[in-house]
Image (cartoon, rainbow, N blue to C red):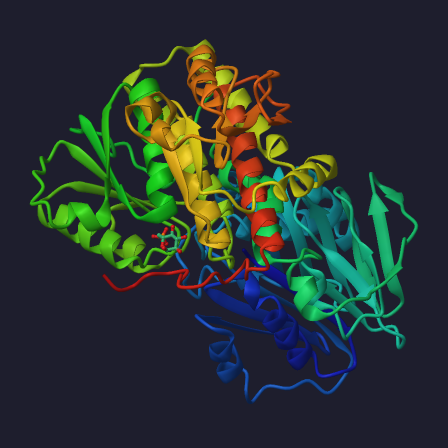
Length: 603
Ligand code: G6P
């Protein structure tokens, strides 16, 4: 996820910007850049890779007067991580940094190109600076030009812009992406896309609201909303850097669970239009000659792949199978060229997945990576990539990466369905409405978290957990069980509910915990009778469902039952929090569980 910093004052501007960016490193990035305006001159530096590369490039540069600067760490979404795609983006006399995604950038870009503007990068961000300069040339008033620019943008953004047309100011705007502005006792002004960049510098801050914009200068902060001047609601900035990085949460995993609403919004942005699914990353030939999909992955990514194989068959009417990469590698698999080979990986570096991908390439298959890290080995090797846009995931137990993988593949199943015409317009519209509802579905309400926290004390012992579900909810059961075992060290299995009677039910007694995923929209009566069978054998049942279930020992009522996938995502969050709270009660290291690694680059 990208990071933004800004500064106005007399101190060493470059050092302040780079320090701020360093505090945002935890968010993950693949390039960085700064632009500094001092005495009417703008200097800009960009480097791919780590911040030390930017520091090396700027080591002979320093400022000595009052000035201002903006900086950015970029996590690639549109275009590869190259210097040209790194921020700040340059117009003729202005620079911009931006977090978020400009949804209407393609139409704006076409209009600007038609009026003679030359673009250097593949990013959506670059339209902002050109649009501002075009407006400025027409209006000749920088603030009015900025206001008009912001009005034209659709999507999510946190923007800082500096311009030689008004060299004493930083212009800012926020909509959907976080942005904080603050000042110290001297009146120097600081910007950051997260608290972490401002701690130790600003003493009081304003958390900008969506739709806020304005400018800052040596005279202070000037804030506007809907063309009206707005009062400054300053708050003291307290806290330490590590808790700021965790956004006030106890663990990175908890932060990442809570972040799912935001990152799922990023995942769908620009890809879900009013009447169709669109992937800029896939060309018209993408699906030519394909009659089968094979998905290959490890761990959590395997579970998301399994879930989505149901969607591919159901929505896109295409034969789909899923393989664990470490098994696939050595089974002497038969591969045919009409198969699209899909690898799923958060890190893009998992050794077994990478090797399976190499085998598929060697066999001449068309390959697609669903991945969270651009420029990773898997992305570099694949013919096509869809980035999941989850931002860096620090908790070893994967949460938001899983959520975004499922989302990307749900959209992909609809994209293929569109192409193959296996879905009616009405059904597609219903799916699009459901996708747009998911960021709301995964928001964590305090009451829900509190309830799970209280329940968790009853699930600290026993001789095992069975997470059970049917259909799409079977892979979710696998993932729920995987989360729990990863961080609680308790034995947990995910099982297809209908299969329990073929063996595992022999384990049922009051010390066997059944976590039953009972969606209203997917075979409710079937799963209900499977749970009844376990209840009759005295298993302790925690039922998760929108429908009351009398035989449950414990019951978590879900709220979103308008679509199977809403139920899927809401239950996903519940199982994640359950695992987290059990782990906390057992005193385990939630973010770094024993024996596990975030990225497994060995076989
Ligand atoms: C490790 C991680 C898991 C992850 C798996 C696959 O085991 O601990 O959380 O699901 O690798 O990783 P990938 O980066 O390929 O998704």
